[in-house]
Image (tube, rainbow, N blue to C red; front, top):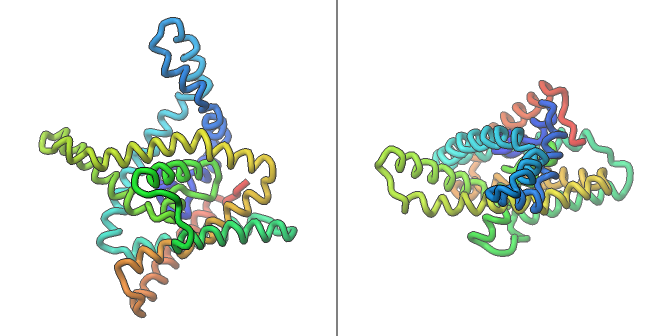
Length: 296
């Protein structure tokens, strides 16, 4: 799931669905309430340990803990590769991502039904919103720490829907490369500290970014993820079309990263197209092996 969520166009929720624990994942996320978290934190009190134990069982910690460790490990490994490629081969990286996202949109849209004008409008609204955000016509409020918190909240919320990845959300709001670099710098600083050749100061700045992102993710689980879940329960068809529309509207987002370092010469366009084609082939191949992605 961590590897999937670290790659735009590939969804950790889809992996959970294919491996048969999507329902358990949603149940665990839904069970993560402020009340239960508070009960666990108060477990230091001997009189409250029974309640804390019950809350841990309801949260399904024996499932979430190993899942979380596995995801964090995978994301850390992917982040290092992304940081290196973003600096050395941005056309390769973001061209490949463009293909992944485009193929993902095709796979998801063909599994949904356009049975009314409402359906078309929902998909168009999601697509239009994503295009406007990707092109910076619409900008998220705030910057710096606030934007990192918002990025964490939205990215983690993508886990509940097969087909939408957290990395896609981060690319859409322009934080993917920055957060990958900060995570890599933090892990390197920690490694240097353990080996005795580093300083706390070197780990402090990237560590603050990582903590803010994780905190935003926790807030997202308690808020945005629940809003999306309720919307799916209320009007599943329109919500899915809107969310998949966000995927489609995100297709040009990686291209803006390429434009930051390269002029759109013929060779750059051809190279981007070739890597995008490879990304699309990979996604369609995964779709075929998995027997088809289903956003339901």
